[in-house]
Image (cartoon, rainbow, N blue to C red):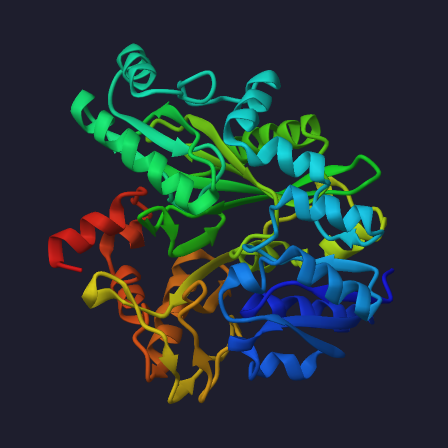
Length: 450
């Protein structure tokens, strides 16, 4: 096991990794930007190092600064969390060249699955179902038009190098495709410094279901069941739950087998997520691989009883998983609501600022992952996530009841948050019946205003 580890991230995921390391007896070094200088979680670290000014590109994304901090602090490993450098193959390679273990996949695996076109090629090669689309990157609007006419509208353009909804456009005809092509390229270039796009058939009214995998360095790859991430706005996830209301044991086994096959072909190690679209008829299609720990990992932890962050660290240290696929049992039902510093009444405008009043929910079945507290400053420079509210109960109906009670208890004043939106979502009859798709939230907001 590692003696000393550096956490190259911020906020609730930095705190989550800190807690995992403390339980494993690992000394911690946490980097921070000038905007996070007063973050409360820094007090729990064995050592803290400022790596630059507030903007992420000058601090949390500054590879030389992160590596310098790691060398000065004499750490054996770096955990990147999610976002920032978590899926950066170059950073993973630099860590390896400096004899620092990167807590995540190898640089080669990150590169293999990080490019959406290459990832689809891997999926096709192992026989996983893939949405019809372009065989590679789309070089011109003429090629996009030809492909769209061949597979039929509607289609969706996606950035080859990214995710999170950026560089994506849906088109229902030639005119909207041409406009979307140029807009998506510009957005992809701005977000990922790579304007490459690919094109797929757009699956209408699907669910978004992802499979959590763990893979050690001894060749063992297991799946830990699915998470349903269907409730989202503009491709940004709002609510996740496990198990999915739309997945039965037979479908879970087939999706899990496809995820494992893809991971094996990519020579993948550590934690990762293989994402699928599930259409109304029950057919599923490979979307992408997220080569990191996910924001929503606590959902899987709740229903499996496994600590995914500790598992990541143990795998990076060379330890075997120590259990088999048959040992993975799904118990109860878990739901996570992401609470963001955004104003749902003002088109989800960011709402940075100082939290004046903070009363967390509690009681049986409730877990809150957050770095926030009364007096904490939510800076404007980073992701707007403030807290992840998780409930775990014996069944879905009980989990929803507990979530509604916890949302009523949760008080955050001084900034606007998405708490009111969640109260609406968890009271909606379609959600209660489990009858939702990826466009549900936007239709709900459109019918009653945002």
